[in-house]
Image 1 (cartoon, one colour):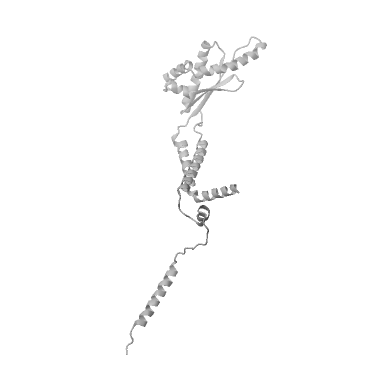
Image 2: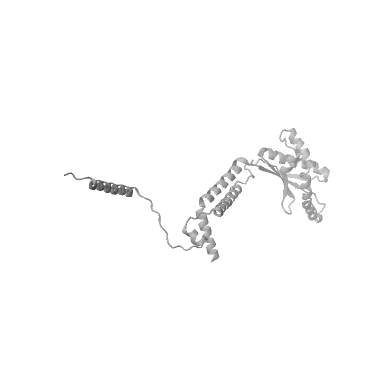
Length: 254
């Protein structure tokens, strides 16, 4: 019974303030759309794949060597995102006028991902320019290939696939923005309607008297507005009555 009452109250609540809820929802959708399409700068992802492997002396040690290479990927991640690789790559990019950002900014743009039990890992670069992002990814991969042999004594580094300029942005995710704006706008609309309902002290119907104030409904008097033809009839009757009175009040001549 309480659930039925609560559901009925919610339906009445929404029907009463549906205009405000709808306006807030549309407003949230418009704000999210403006952010996603015009304010937030799109970012493009460029990826280059690298394979690092060591030659095993015989078949017996090949599996152990592959497992060691997989575990070494964590070390490669630390090297690539460290200044030992990023700083030389930044210097080469700056010399070719391909990148003018700081080392800290470059570090924030670079990430390394890998699949489980795979010797191949990817260097991912997020940049606002797709062509520049591809150049940065390729240069970091080349710098890693040239310098890792002096750091870990690994000489079998292969760039499996080079980065190419992305055709579409990966950020912002516009559908997510629109869905979030729709949800937040709807919640704000419900909050606005709830505040209106809590601060409203007016009596709008007999329901408020019987259910809120616990008064008995003995009846109601309907309000009727005057229509134009009724006003004409009343004025006509009044004019006839006035003329009749004037006739009776006129003295008779002898």
